[in-house]
Image (tube, rainbow, N blue to C red; front, side, top):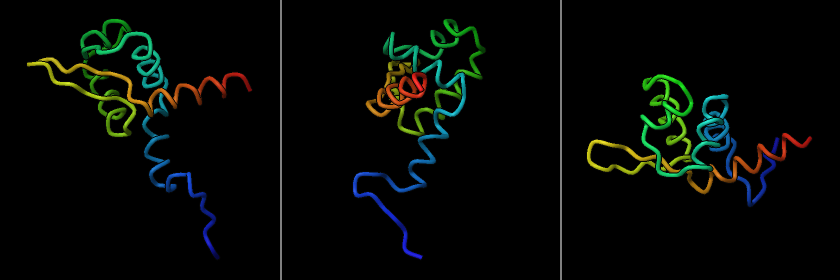
Length: 99
């Protein structure tokens, strides 16, 4: 059976990686937070969302792997910012909210 593909759409495994990257309420909260306040440290993310550092670290790690968040190293501090793909995912989620 022939596989149906769209020239503009990413491969299914790439899409799965992206979807898994934001498929958690905490990760969505982090994306929304970074949309409001860019360049936040792990400590700042944990403090605002009232989660522990280990939880914040794991979720930002997964967001970065999926390409939704950028990490910038500033000495001992890692700053997190929303990647263009992360902004697109937030737009997608807003559309889902309207449905």
